[in-house]
Image (cartoon, rainbow, N blue to C red):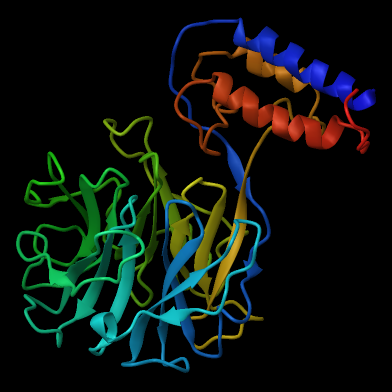
Length: 379
């Protein structure tokens, strides 16, 4: 009966909040990170591992690793799977010589439909244009093998360093790193767009001096909703002020995909350590951050191991260290506004309006703290 009352309470609260309508607005949700956890064996080894991307269902992870047992040529692309998002990752499998026949292949991103895989390759791969080039492999279905990778060619690739490709879920934007002329530092983040999947990529544009700096920005990762961009500094280059270690992870946000990017902020000391931290990747649902770190306690080499940390929306909206009905009232009072706290769904950074998506997330956390630990069936 207690559990039934809890469900009644939830339905009542949802009904109350959903019936309140205020004006629209923009929001930048607040969130934090849980403690990073090393993925451990069998994903990490005594060699170097770098996380690359995830399939849309979150059950396949692509990574790059250098010289681990089974390597074909130096840095290879590997794939690990799991049955559910609650399971641990299985032993990574080398993607084979179709991908890994040359000295370096570094994984980039996979399309939302799972049919195109982007990566960058070293200059000894035939048909290249510069020091490193972006390539893409395709397959007819997710059950088919990958075809021979194809160099994307100009204007994506140039006679300079081009790599770390990150394609948006709709397949219409490609973010990547290049040291071509027209940048603000050694390496900058660029973006190329196309009107449809059948169109060619347009001339890339630099993200500009708000995102790029005199430092070297690398490894871009765009969230699936297109509103959060992660990147890190390249170690050994000038540093952005406000960092914590040799290489730090930063993020920039925007209110919508048509708005400009905000000034980047450092992810802070939970994620960034005195060691090198980078290669940040978000799971498709935005719930978890994966990254590579050389912090103490790992298994790997000089570049480090793959870690993961939960991304936690802040639902204690009034800051009294209790998630209760007072916090719900704060959300109701800011329904439809640009409040910086209450926009917590469906991604932890919100969707630019305080609405039913945020209420759903709030209720999940409210139930964790307030529902009795009673498994009695509803009668």
